Length: 313
Image (cartoon, rainbow, N blue to C red; front, side):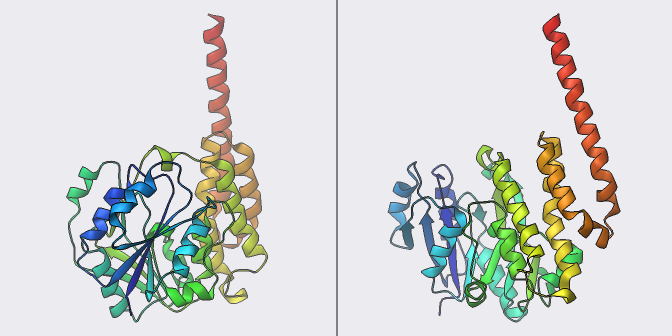
């Protein structure tokens, strides 16, 4: 059996996908296939895939969002494990061999999280060197809640049977679909977080830096709604761990809303999770958020006052 199916969901990534595929060709570990699902690109992404079709499985879908695209890819996968790679990111030659070592050493965990390095320009990755393997391993993902590890889609290596068991990604059009998936992995056997070496470069560019606040808010509120409805596993016994992980995602977004002028969205999340923050003793957030909100309002008032003064002059 193939060890890995590498899944790439892409949408309008003509500027970056060639570098992503090149990083796959350099992998030391060869027992893998690569499946690319184009999510209705309107640029020449698909044309750039054509020279690589001898070693890629390529599928084209109408634009339905990354959750749907990744699920389609997994439906066509043959690997024991699924390794997700975003179409603007870069792997290092040792990436898949690192994952293979983790799986062997830690008894085939259901979920593995990669180690990332943020970068803007490819030249920055030259400083990344191979290091000895260091991993933190846990009985399951919830057991790592005190460590506050963020597990995004581009960081995930998942056992295919486990992914299928929990139903894959939500196909609703929203952000934080990867956080939702990680939470549904919560009690499945084995979670390993790679500490070293760095296994992928997480590219920063204007498109991923921009924020669709409505889509992000929808995704964050979905995490809250799923927890309230009892959709995440573990029952009452694991509730405190779940709350640590859910609020790990909601806190930074609520504060970002304030900083970017979306006060209503920020306050909505604050009140939706306030009781949970009391339960997990996050007093710094409970008291700090209103203070930050006040500061943001004052900054906005001063900015508007200054602009009116300049126009008057």
